[in-house]
Image 1: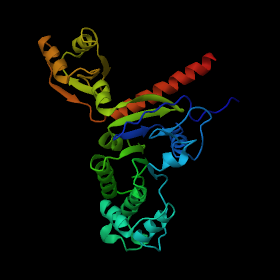
Image 2: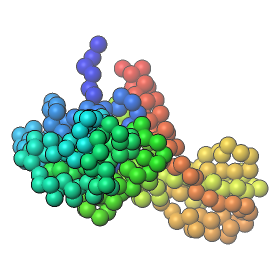
Image 3: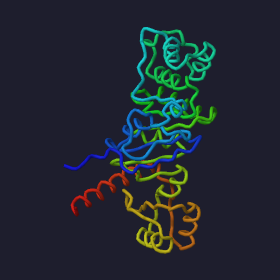
Length: 300
């Protein structure tokens, strides 16, 4: 048996102020990457830089900039939310009552601060977890599945809070999630990894312009396919209904493609964006990566 590389040749660049979605199938290396980012394990090669500080050699300086929510943080259920935060703050020098009140207000728990955590809903506990991340006044939030196990109301609350922390407080957010709609709704940038390697990274809006498919309904499917793949040079796939095509616009403006079809005399009944483009792209890339790996193993 050869060596197992949980992460191999992985390079990620998280822009300051971004909400950066970190995606990958189970076993892709996401958890290993998070543990390296937090200094819990060290890479055998390469390095992790946070704010210019090498996590392996300047751990305190690097992690002072980080607030982390990993694997559903635990709290003392018999203590109040406020007291839990006071204990956590005490591990890193303490925080004033005013500062803890400010944080509780920021996450929407000021009115329930003195209730025991055991009576908190799952959504409230998740917001308390985010409050604990804010105690060190971080520049970077590292969040691992922050909405896991929440009901729809709790999911909405936590997502709105994360969005607000990025937009209003100027925090950079590194969000690991298996919920593609969550990433699509929250993130400004994404990376997809598989088997420890990066297979896609970029600004979400740019990736959407490049990879989102548009559903085209026409009475002349074959002619439309030939025109789209020929003169326009687009990627086209058959849709799941007759008389329709899915076209990837490769960065072209939708109105430009629609105008070209019309000027070519091709009737278009409808022209609409695919609603779940990131799901489709994720499945396509990870399946393709798996196929390439299997082919390489057969050749070897």
